[in-house]
Image (cartoon, rainbow, N blue to C red; front, side, top):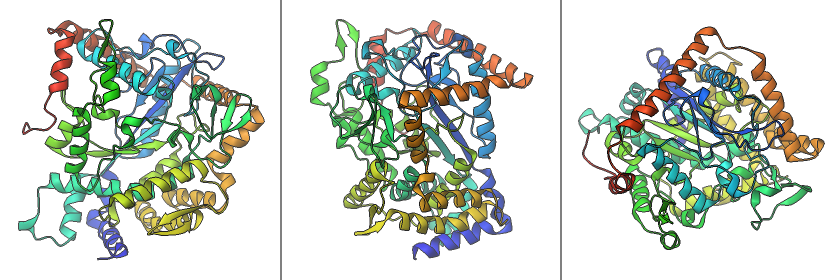
Length: 533
């Protein structure tokens, strides 16, 4: 069966009256990371504001690596417009409790203080809170603190279970030979991830927004960047330095390439990494002067340390590890992790971008997705790396099926293949919002100056430095969020969540009944896969 046949057949199937409603039953959620900064655009030295709740237990407002790196997590919604409205509300609630501080508008960090002055996120005195804190100490040890202050947008995407039933039936597999739906759903999401690997370079060209960074971010590391201004470095055709080898990288992870040809192989690779000692980390040990400095000395302390542009995910239960959840109950959704913060959007991502992602990801679901060989995986990685560092270079080519093809030509062909998916999502209405999103991206392929990375570069030059541009956008966004009040019912809801999260943290701290060393030992020895429910 050809690629075009499968895509066309599945589009026709989902376009039938009895199945069309399934497309509106999927879920989209967003996680937005952002640094707290002071009025001058410097990293905030204050603790996570108690008024917004507990970073340990609040379901929507927490911290990532640093105490000043906030993370906002929306509930999953059927429409990305609803998701973005919630993200806007979270920002407004937080802004009224920042006491003059602001939220940095860029993916790449503001001017950072010395490493010793970057405070690692604190989660209280409970064992689980200390485990999260020590894990971050380990990240500092392994990667440096500056790297952990990079921010991004994570886009969570799922389709309803019934849709997998429909697709499975349409594939012509006799009912007696069909595997459990959980396995089919997991394999389908893994297949989606393979297609994402093939084509995600396009997202970097269209939405990458970090072609520049502050000189101090590199902490004297060797690099091939050019100097734009005395305190700003860049690459002239870069789209996303955040996603380049200057971003979240280290030698231990360099050889870690989980195979995404099956959930089993993916899980097996991560299980090996969280159990395999790494000599340089062993030399450091887990404690220094009696204080924990990392959870263990393995390649990965925990599964989430593995950095990837996309992950298969499952909501975890209390005390459960991410890989356990995948093993026991399969893949529930996928998390796209390569999206830069859009510095021209107050919430960091536009509705148009969300509409395009919905089209792109549904295409990745419906299109045929053959297994990927090691050689093909290297080609996909090279295409991605070439795009983030020189995506706007005139005449740039990528590698497709062993031959070079122009980025623009391939991109336009891909957008052409996305059009029937957009039409389906627009309920066959011509010029609907998904088709408009595609048209806007096609314009960027025709004119690289319309990409966010080109716009950022122009405005940094006008502002005089990355820091000045970042502060200008940060102040604009701060004024936007401070200008409007939340609806009283929303204000009450957020206040209640904040209070409940603080009470929940206290309950957890009071209920601890084992020493922290024993808690860590039990966590490190926990069985990653098993037969439990």
